[in-house]
View 1 (cartoon, helix red, strand yellow):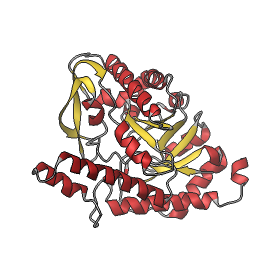
View 2: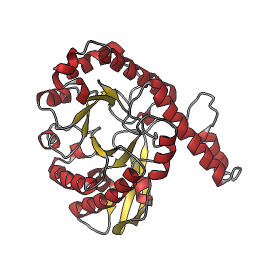
View 3: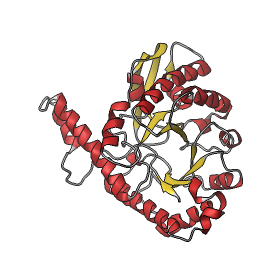
View 4: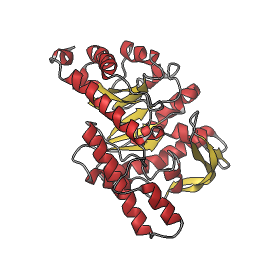
Length: 330
């Protein structure tokens, strides 16, 4: 059976009337009109809402939507001794920004950055909940390194801290942990370093691990990537449809997550087109190994558009799963 998941982030605010308006609560908190505990309740209510929206859309493996995250890197930076968040820079080729990490000393993990929100999200559903962490190659690529002054040493130090975070997430019950590496495709010379970092992060952690690639082409690194020690590999086949052929001709060792839904364009995909793409993949790979997802986080989209896209993805997968079991046997 083909399953569905999201990459990670999700629109945190909406133009629609909602029971809790997080944007308004943040403004009120900035003006001193509400207290910290009231803002915290708003965050938790918003996390529970986006979990419920994923569930109602028919998504199988959920995320907390990264509602509290300013960007992919800053939550981890806040919990790293030896690092602090610097100025704003453009996030790849998107019209959003991130605070680049500034490394001033040896990196040491201070404590969990993501566990509290994972627990809030997991408590809001009976479906499995996936945790998401930034990858060491992406973190090191986007950091200002004033201490190690060596890319490999910095990436390995980040991997050591992420191992501690992964252990904490597994202890909190996370069945899946996704490592996001949007920069990896642009650094083909770092692919074996990425493998070493993954060994460090995953060692002894009782959870399944997925690697998410997006924004950059992976054709140069795919021969190595497909042999990584992973339970699932996520690949963008929307912006880069040729990458589907890479997967079909030489599948990775674990599950395959096809990023077949455009997370950076408001145009709605046709469920029939999605279904045909997924059916082709299921015939070649087997439906039980196949996942369908957006090709990146949905935070770039308006809230209503993200909801419509999730529903269409689930509709396409339901069409595949409703067909005779011949796909399972291939």
